[in-house]
Structures are given as C-alpha cells and as structure tokens.
Image (cartoon, rainbow, N blue to C red; front, side):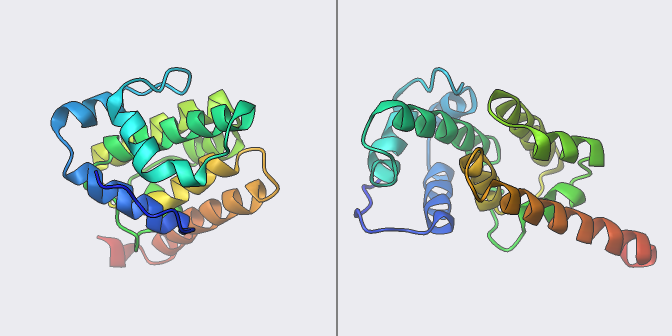
Length: 178
C-alpha cells in the first residue's frame, strides 16, 4: 500500500483507493481486517491503512480521533468483507434492495446509532457479500461517518430513497425483473 499525498480528497476517491489496495492485499491482511472490532482495531493491516490513507483525514488526537478510528474500523471491516465488490456506479441503497435486504433490516440500519449502527452495518455487509452484490461502499462510509453529525439525516434519506426506488420500480414493472 503506497502513501497518498496529503491533499484533500473526496470520500469516494478515498474509498476507491482503499478498495483497490485491498484487492491486491494478501489473504492474511484481509482476514485481519474482516475481524476488526471498533473497540480494538487491531493489527498491522488496519494501521497500514490509517498511516498511508487516513491520517490526513483524521483529527489530530483526543476523543475525536478515537471516534474516527472506531468508525474507520467498521468501514474497513466492510471493505474487506466485500473485497472486489466495490462499484462506484451501484448506489448503496439500491444495492441493498437488489441483494434482498428486507425493509425491516433497512429500517434497523437507518435508525441505529453508535454501537448498534456498527452491528447493523456488519449484518448488511454479510448479506451483500452473500449475494455478491456490487456496491458503492462510499454510501456505507458516509452512513458510518455521518452518525451524530448534522448531515446524518440527509445521508440516511439518500440511502432510503435509493432502496425504495428499486423496490417500487420492481413492484411496478415485475416482468422487467424476471
């Protein structure tokens, strides 16, 4: 994993770079990232991504840095679990619908905050992986990073809109989806 210059990057670009690096990562690093826990981010694979990709984006220290590291542990766990499935053209909410994530699971995901959000992200990540559903993981990252911020509701609404657009289109045009 090569270091990234410190210029400001979009979240989508950052997620794309990390996803590309994980495609080339060894099985040991991917396994380590899949086992990440927010309270114990763990070993060298996590810290390699932090140092080479995330440090310019993270707060310098204190509780805000710890919170950011916990959130990135959740995001990196999802990126590793969905290795090879990152597709910037497949919006997160739409991918959830296409992978068969239930409305109940979606509602639990969008209403969760803090630790329950991390648990719900793990559950939907598992469903996306089982369905081998291509997904823009930038939407998942926005969801996790926006938790408790002023833009939290708009991020969640975007995911819901994308999910229900697919659901309603499928209900209105069932023969197109056979």
